[in-house]
Length: 188
Image 1 (cartoon, rainbow, N blue to C red):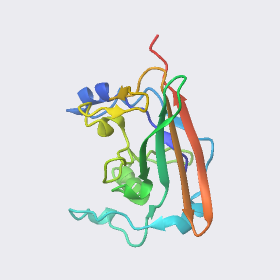
Image 2: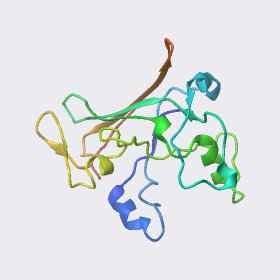
Image 3: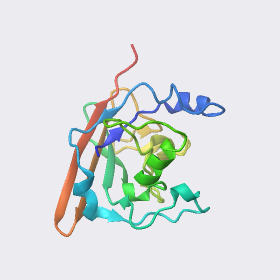
């Protein structure tokens, strides 16, 4: 596993979403962290996930702890200023665990090959401060995020660097995912 930021142009994605689903709003950039953490290393950090209601289809049912307890933080660093934490969440909040996502992806015959990369989707927790995208954090732009310098963010600005960090920790053992950091440049 790695930290993965599959950047979204939410204004384009919002327009595309109905009736087609996101396409051009998701296909322009992706960033990953430099550390690769094996699933074997993460076995001790398995945990239960959220209750799934309504009941899932039989091919998505599972037993045991299939979610992973991975703490995540997203920060914005405006150009020439200090970084500001905008979200702290956890991978264990994902409604669909990785096993279910893989099963669902392949149920219609889609081939999965060694080396394919799959993203989990936006990782948001149930509480304010745990929302995983600026669209959620700012309530679709109606509730701007206040920065320490008095400025506000409804969405990412040109010159902002978005930083994602993650780690898992239990009984004195900590495994880090490093960070993924990407600066948003103005359009040409």
